[in-house]
Length: 113
Image (cartoon, rainbow, N blue to C red; front, side, top):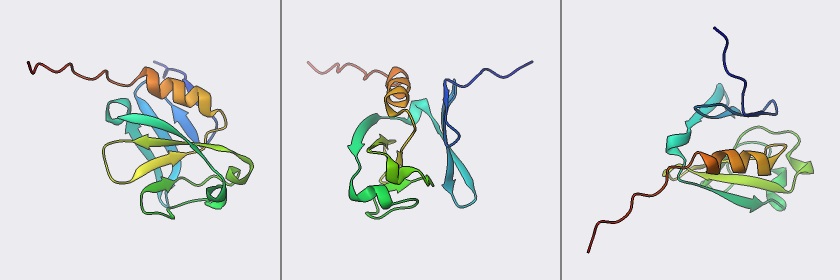
């Protein structure tokens, strides 16, 4: 049996059929974020933060290691309902944003009268 091809893979960020894999997120390895945990995805223009190669500078966003970040202008802020938001700079942010948004669980309609 062969595994399904990833929906997106640039060597640092991989979108699989089950979730987002952020490589070099922790000093010891990757972080897997199941699509069901993603509450929202926001575009985050990076200016000064482009020099944040890894870690956090504001205790709200956590950036995976990306040595090419200084050459990029757009990051994706991923809200998983926790204080710290994984913040990534894929090579094709529009593609990753589309994939994540396609997997967002629609909100449950209110039953209040």
